[in-house]
Length: 115
Image (cartoon, rainbow, N blue to C red; front, side, top):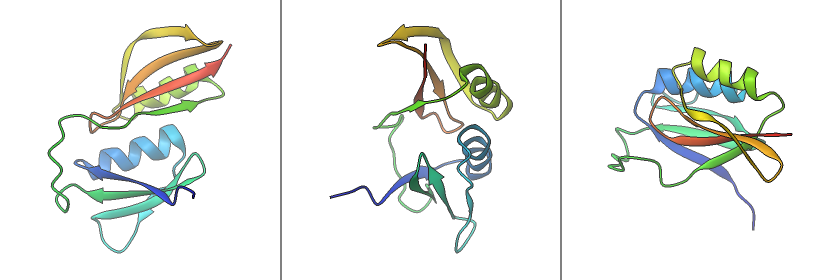
């Protein structure tokens, strides 16, 4: 068994494409219509689907990604520059600096950098 792709139902497509392309280098490009974008996220296929199609009603994400980054400060700069939010100050856990961020659609993500 292996993971085929990650699909995210997106409310604000333009902001989300910009955020994931600049913060995570996802290389998202329009697929068959402006309602779909494809790219990669940490080596996995990433698919954005406009939330107008599945009409998901979740107020917040039901999954949370944790990404190890090479330069936490540079990544946080990209988060700020691309309509993301930073949740508090970095903490230390398991030999890593950790901080939560929020993407433009309100999904939470944890960024980690080895100490």
